[in-house]
Length: 352
Image (cartoon, rainbow, N blue to C red):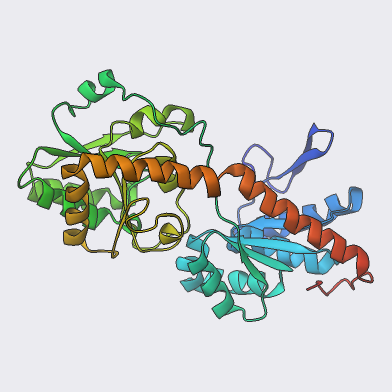
């Protein structure tokens, strides 16, 4: 959907020989916009037939891909990323789209083993596989910290616990602040929030600041990926204490930058971060356990450095963009081959 296209309008852009973008203008009613998007999908297929339809995130594009695939008799892939099964499923409006996408798609991919189990629980007939996120270990790499930035943020002479991305309650903001308060009892420590705090949850931080006026919390506005490596370098330990999650890119980025990490046993975090091997794991919501784990790494720089080195090796070997791309290419190839072997599907059925 594109606000630059008039309501109800459709604009096609040929970006390269084999790449086109079709933009649909948003309408006043969301259901009208989605209907227009479906019609645009069907019209584009008539002009240049699809081999496979792929919808990222189940609620909107996933539903459209599964529905259009069944309608057109083409294989479809839908991908669960996290919020679609952790939160949207419990919305009366979104749940029907989530369940339809899971049940009707030819294949379902998820970014973590936990999401795969949830998808199978909701749609036992679904063919589900895990395709993990990847990050560029050349872009995200160990670099010297930006000392001028350190001074400007007031971090000089302090141990720094870092978090990247938009901090919010779902990402463990409350236990993270609680852990900071415990750590601050016996050391000069700062919490660096690289990406700030989500507006809806800013009140949580405001309350903690009133209750704990001595806490040193620094909010750094969002930066593009290429500017983040020096920011990660300011962090003595990276924390990702999510209560629920998919496979957070910020975790992979920090690991690729060689940061020692403490993460929660939530979502796909344990798929990547193996306790005691690439970092430390704690239970979601456990502020005291999080403080102990963070303190252990702050007090043990040699162990922290070894875990950071192992974390970078882990991301480079198993969570690269190339590995993610290979998995999807194999999946698309298998679906195309299966579609060629199978008699043409009826308009109302999807191959499985």
